[in-house]
Length: 524
View (cartoon, helix red, strand yellow):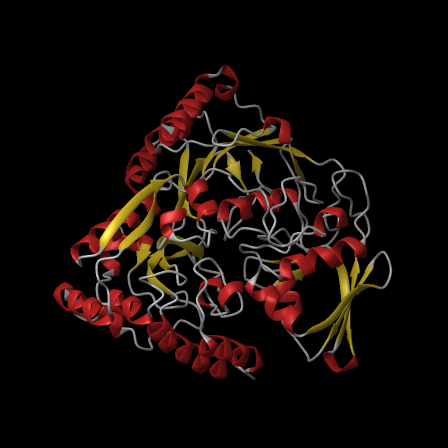
């Protein structure tokens, strides 16, 4: 019923004359999924991260070569042998309500973010105090040196370090913020937001871009060339493809693999891989409830995973768009590891998996798996997983929901028979999974961990050691050991890497590399 309603709304919108005429100052975008959560600190949903970079700004930023650059800060100084950092905000920063951005806003914003983000929590663990020395100066006093401080405050993935007014930033980190007041180049228009159908952003006339640097990914001067950005939620892939071909929308974030041949033949349409590091897909267990509170049960499932099956279902027949040899860290990045990969690449024997499950103590308990209906790649992965779990004899209760519902429901710690869950499938940008710093899925800090809440003292100890490693070879050795520990504790199971193709009208120019950004984008 809900899917029909959402699709009906999208189709009705496409029939409207206003969506057929393309004003030069409006860009119409089809996001990967519904924008169900607005708070980019509270959730790891990539769609909310993309929304966040329209509305909010961050102290530092990441350029297209993954180097950290100042963004909201004018610069910094490091004193007391690395134990004190003084960050000076640049001139001209204002929130959408007209108030100036002050250090007193930055401090609670970063404190709140540090409770939700993997990289942020590492920084906060070594922070004695964050304070506002004046309206423009933020001071970090550290217990020990943390050279990666700018990298943490400029990370470009999910759980972005969004700066918001103090009155909002004081909100408990476990409570979602729905009032969108940022200092970014666009302001959210709440009166036009229709969940499941439309989100609208208006250019913020009070935004002052950096006066120096070159626009590059989230770094450099952020120039808003459109007066209005419209997100049109279109769950049906063929409807989205036809809207793009007809020029009724400008940009389809994640073109479905089976629509790419049609789009490539289309006049005035360009397709390309926007993020070379792709997105690592994975299966996540709920460690709080049977049967996956038992590590032996989780380990048994490793023997049933064939990454190729998942990638062909989700990524199509073009192997250039996926990688089916993925460990705990993003393939092709410096810390990617081959340690223990035979657990996923060795011969698959489902009968042995059944025996291993029985030995581990599985006795046919009902297992609730959240399936997704409106994100094609995750929907395909869920179908493969559902078949696999049935074939190994698990009593599967496959419950399909839209992605927005899944994002909210996966935060529930309730037992599966009271609205909770046992199995969830998701994916993080390759950049987020490339190192222990930002890789949320590898955390083993129990109740403070990302959804699934695994407890692994060994993984936490190795992660802490990684931050202390003196060089890349030492970091690499630690990541090899972390991956071996992943095969023992199984906080998640990698299913492969998808390099998603985006599709857009060819008259859009200067699209940022490495992720969805609307600044710098213009119409030729």
